[in-house]
Image (cartoon, rainbow, N blue to C red; front, top):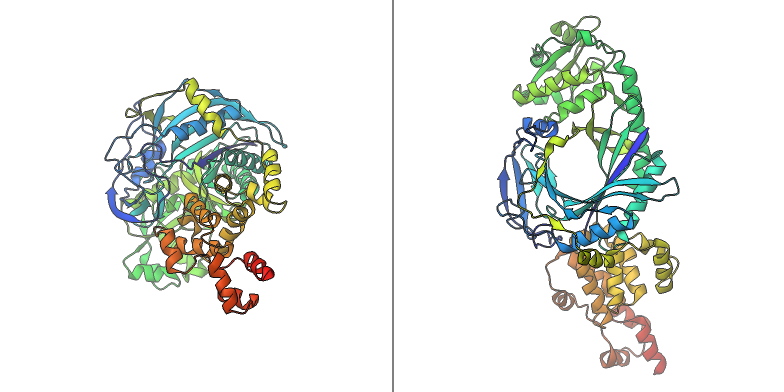
Length: 590
């Protein structure tokens, strides 16, 4: 078994090739439409993954957000690369003892799945050949890149819709050598790299801001990439299931009779089974009523093989169905299934298909058009493969994965002609030192001194650690800041309020309101709630409209007199506006 990881961490700087902020307030300004196609690389070849995406003939719609400009819409050339992002990348590369490039050249990686309006992603190599020390064993670091984040997908059905709010946000990509020993070691490596990136103080926070791509192969198998793993706890099971999938496929491939493969897989004999399924049950009769057709093709020599189990809930038939799904089909019916759930006579279906004793078959439901023909061709090609295909796969629940596209090749790369090479000067290296990752153990001891032994470990692992440090540096009480970032935000999120709608700088502004005695500790949480609901609202306006301003000094003394010094009554009436400590102190003095 060989395992390597690619870590992608979004940075909390401005966008990479324009001066737009990385964070959006969620305001949509309009939309644009694009259709993308594959082009040849500098070597005159087309990338297999790009060609496959082009076959889908998708139209893409992009929502333009408040933090987007003409660079994201591909109507303006890129500006100079963001200096802070380059400095963070250099600092991380030096920390891992990598050889830093003398010049950073940006390349274009052809990507036409809709995730970029231009049809390519810009990526620059920063360092090569470092290593990381882990308890499970030393792991080599092959390369470190700084590159653009993709557009966020909003919906996949029909014309795929994407958002431009995150497009162009800088990413650091770190690729390890295939030195990882097992699933648990892979988890440790991912966690160690994630912690190191947080220790720069510039790692972005929120769901999807750090992703792991798992590269896995076995002896006799091939490198497959499980792309976009987000939860560390999923990594061991994903590794184990991909190893098992490849081992079982190697076992199955020996049994596939290549000589029985259809002579013309690009044009198999299509059989219309619509009439047989009309009187069935479930979703199929309804689909037929809406104009869909049920089409089947024969798969000679594969009787019993499509039901071959790779691991729990995944069979060879599921592998073939995944290929059809990439063309927009919800799934595929095959000859090793129980047809009772469809309410259809299996014998009648096999008679119509002229299926012999050794034959299986595949059935798709939808418009009988070019997309269906391409889906069937893809299924046939995959069904008779005599080797495991190298492919990019999507992680599912319970450690499962499914086919997304073939593994990209070097043919997708060509030089970026709109961005000048960046010379890595002594000044750039010296400036990068402010982002050098600190030792987590040293940071933990500091945090314990500032807060306590319960809050400190939570802060260390928090994506808000950088914001906490900035807030404390501005004079905010350390314990109040810690409770806000590790406890209050969690409480608000559990209420279903989207806390990611406001960035760390706005949260620091809220804490400064407390530090300047304008609000109480209890009002901090309420003010954040209101900002999450309306990110563009002014903090002063919310404090005034919601009556959150702190009552202190003479005004508080007056309330004490009016309420006869009844602390319980006063706190019940002015819970968010009076600090209990100040109230009790004044009552005590009186």
